[in-house]
Amino acid sequence: VDTSDLAAWRDALVPAQVPCYRHCSTSARVRSFRVGRKNFEVYACPDGVVSLTMVWTDGRSRIPIGDLTRSLEQRTRPPELVVRRDLRTAARHGPELGRAVERRLGARSGPAVPIVYWRVYPARRGRYWARLLACFKHGPDEVRFFRDIPRAGRWRCPYCAETTAQGRRPTRRPAGERLGPT
Amino acid sequence: MARSHGRPVRLTVVLADWCPHCVPLSEKNGKRFARLLRIPYRRLDIDDPEEERQADQLVRDHGDWVEDYLIPQVFLEWSDGTVEHVLTGFSEAVTRTRDAWQHLFGSEWFHRLRGA
Image (cartoon, rainbow over all chains, first blue to last red; front, side, top):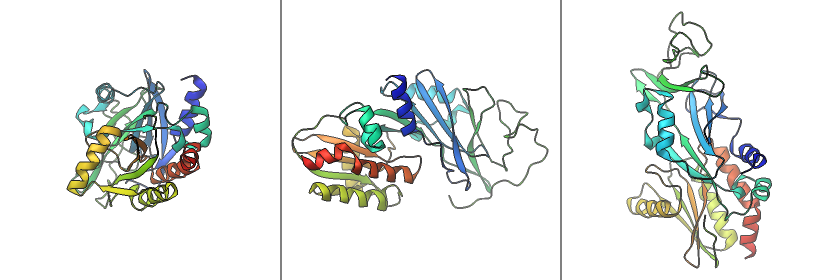
């Protein structure tokens, strides 16, 4: 796949934002980075709550789930949060992405772009919901995942324990998110 | 996806009633798709044990298979026995799945299919 094809696929495959999943009414914006040939698209709301992580390749070859699992485990604490059952695949073809993409990228019978979605569902912690959070303070092409109770954008990244979503030291513990319908 | 021969004979949507990407969105569009091609429509509900068995087989053989696979998944069956995976729901948002259906109906692929 040449660079212009890659850009066309990215435009078609990667929305800039999606609704925040079962957490708040703001949008989850995408943060993109690459690991080898894999493109990671992490959708997180301003509180750092991850709605979805989408992984796709520009080689149109299948994404080995074992390799992807290891990549995610290396960036997740605890690594046991990465469960194969939460990794779901989809193959995308030109026609479902719009006529311009279809014309550019060829016939339906051609190879599809494989995608793997990783969604970690909220887990109850007492009265609150613990959610997957992402810290993007680990370099331009890096992310770290962990689970915690989001408190108005304040949480401790276990990798850089002194900071919060806004980069400040936490001074108090605001009320967490109360239990509610998901 | 395999190149198909012959003529389309049935459209199948693997779905669940609780899934907003499935009902009513993909059921409605699946029926429209089948109606425009003048072929039967079939729904396979993963919450019905017998239909789930058929759905699992279809997804395992022709679709986007993992143990807890995404729904909906849409398949077009051909007269030569080929089964073509048409669409898998978009986890990002229901609006993305809706857009995908609209793109499919407007695609050159679908227009060729109707003319076949």
